[in-house]
Amino acid sequence: MPGIGSMVVIGAAALLIFGPKKLPELGRAAGDTLREFKNSTKGLADDEERTEDKKESK
Image (cartoon, rainbow, N blue to C red; front, top):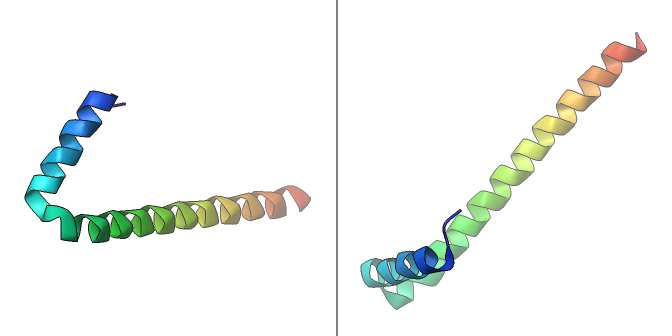
């Protein structure tokens, strides 16, 4: 895991590269992408559990 100092440097670099107007949009898009990925992986895990339950009940 990156430390606090590393996070500050990454944030400053992102601010310089993308600018203050574009940065919130990029953060929001990254958050939405992570949320969708998390929901998808949770759905796959739930599907796998259901198939295992069906196999055990037979």
